[in-house]
Image (cartoon, rainbow, N blue to C red):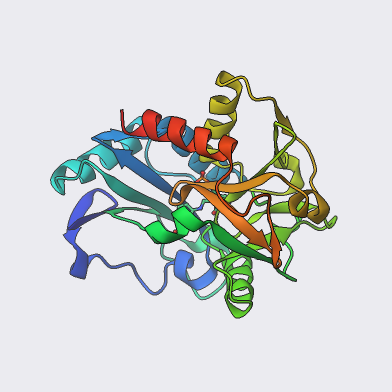
Length: 283
Ligand code: PXG
């Protein structure tokens, strides 16, 4: 497997970044997780828009146009002979000094890794995922806006550790207002009386690309969709609950904090959206 680093391709074993890179020293950078289905990169423009918006926010100038970035992704897939893949695009601040000042860094590094990803077992997709609400709240948007997919994922990792300690595979994270935000690496949806509901972007969440696709698919299927603040009560009392993300795609939630959600199995609307998503990506 070849890895792209700033215009050159390296074997996986030789694909290395300096220990002085502020991406490593401070988590200073942005990234994307993207999927390629049957040779077509899924929602590439949306992923690049989010990457470049995040870079703007952190005052990081990506040394490639969006078009050149897209070409680099396609070239990496081509060199590795991949048609179905998970793509990790990373832009770091670059090599700097042992001080925070990003002005002391040289050129940002652009990294493109192509590989595969399987977050959950087929059995978990079948049975549904168990969540635990964790004490670690999602980053306050005024501190580090969750809309930036930054290289600093400690907030999410801490949440994941807490979930694991509770015997669950995913964490339900609340925001600073105590409302439901999202999971450590996925957005959350519920169905209540035929209405699909998910927290709005200003609840302090990553505005997931899969989330957007699922909202579109639901509207096309005539399912009413509401982007509204949700509480834990809404989750516990939901008829259905599922998560969305590039890696997980759509996965049903069977239990939250020990409460069985709906029937405890993948509900009819989750199933329909899962099928539509599959048709869209595997057509
Ligand atoms: N919330 C958070 C915090 C995320 O990190 C999502 C929601 C879903 O967004 P997308 O755009 O993917 O629908 C994410 C994305 C991994 C992995 O390695 C995690 C994500 C994406 C790809 C891989 O666990 N999270």
